[in-house]
Structures are given as structure tokens and as C-alpha cells.
Amino acid sequence: MRLRRPKLVAAGAVAVLGLALTGCGGGDEHAEGHDVTDAAPVAATGSLEHLASEAGCKPNMQTDADTIRQAICKNADGKFVLATFATDRGQAEWLSGAKDYGGYYLVGRKWVAVGDEKTVAALRGSLGGTLEEGSAHMNPGGSHNSSSGHSS
Image (cartoon, rainbow, N blue to C red; front, side, top):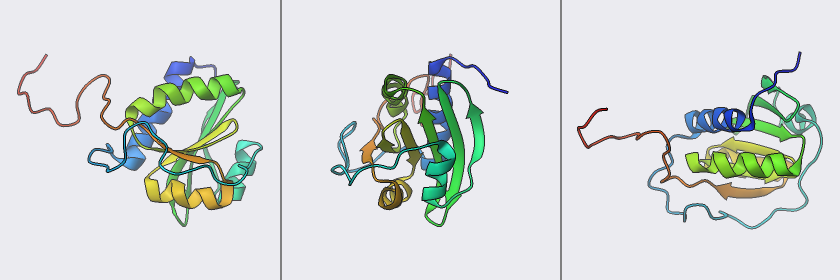
């Protein structure tokens, strides 16, 4: 059975799940929204299951839709979310929204792995891709550490 979800809902779900895996990302020494490292050798391609196998994990499928497939994975390096996309445009739109939540992203052609910096850097050895950092200081919809004392 295939579920159909709007692109923004899927992006938000993975971004929130990514935050749960990586923390809020505040206090990082890297400039927000910029690549953390240069591009690796040619990135892996294929289905979510193939990419998960290359990364050494058995995927726990969370979303299986026409435009995006995502799973939670865990290997010796840590826990991460692996997502594959039907189109390059779908991936670009998802990344644009997801990066507002901070975190670390390993980006290949039509796939993204989201996790903490150490985990996605280690994945780069088996999957290739480009390591990118989200905008840790963006916080749509609220604050992690509200100090204003005001409530709505």
C-alpha cells in the first residue's frame, strides 16, 4: 500500500525525526547553511534498500509514498534517517524545507541521509555524497529554549 502525503508534510516529518536524532544543533562552529566539507567521490545510487545495504543497516521503513521513501537506519556508526526521492526537484524542495531545522545531511543523487555529524560523516565513506549542515538558528513554529516567559 502506498501512502500519499504532501511534500511539506514529508519534509517536516523527516526534519523533525532528524532533529530527534541530532539534537537542536545550536552552538556549532560551522557557518549555518554552508557545506561542511567538499564533495566526496561519486555517490551511491539505487533504491532505499540498496543504499541501506551499502550503509550496513536494515531499514525500518517509515514512509513509502510515490514521491519519497524514508526509513530509520542504525549501523555501527549510529542512527540516521535515509530518504530517497522520485525526482531531483522533489529532493531539492525537501532539502530546502528540511535544512531550516538544522542537523547534518549527506546528500547524493535522489537520496539524503540525516543524522548527527559523526554518523553522516562516517556514512560518506560507504555512500559518497556531499556533507551539508542545516540552518541551526532557524526555528519555525516555536523555540527550543524559551526564555521570554510569555505564553500564547
